[in-house]
Length: 250
Image (cartoon, rainbow, N blue to C red; front, side, top):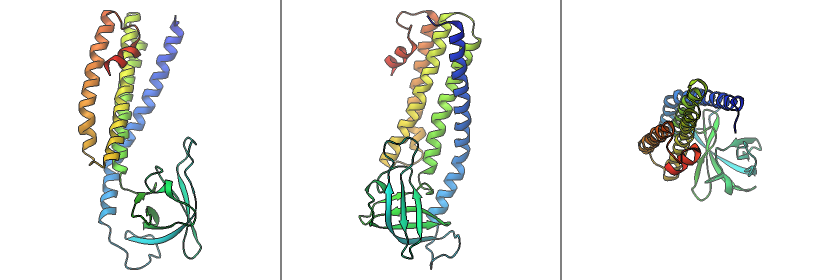
């Protein structure tokens, strides 16, 4: 059986995780308007009349040759990257958020076109017409920030409630089980936001579909959380394992 010290330690760990996640989520939420403005500016940017000699808000199409490409498959935390070469011989290093649809197919010697905006390669296009934003590209950045904000804030807020409940509520094992139910539903809320973001990116849906799809899922999960928390407080049978309760609800 878990001791009181272990329970407190676990609740404190959840509390710290919840607070950190909330801070990250709020920061992401504040980045959404700026990301939207930057994407609008990029889409409205005119083509450069000539090769820009300094950082410019116009868009220039530049031919590159791939010198090397490394997808870092299986290496956690490493972004796909490529080294591109200008006709002059100057090299240009770029990174990507994901390996598809272009980066994973790059091979040394391939010819690609890079879009330069404000002194950065923000997009690459291959010979088959496929295009992909680099890590500096503004397109799809608002969706990433919004999806991340929903995931972090929903999980952080719910986990915070569950952690504080575990630390300060008096009432024994029933309250501990109810608090655990709340925390694990927070995991479900965050996961639902991430899955919604993946679906939006795969389907190339507009930004507004993220809250439109996630919202009903979140309401169902909140209703499930309340129902199972009440059941845990009443000592309903079969609710001793909060994770099992969440699994059955999902």
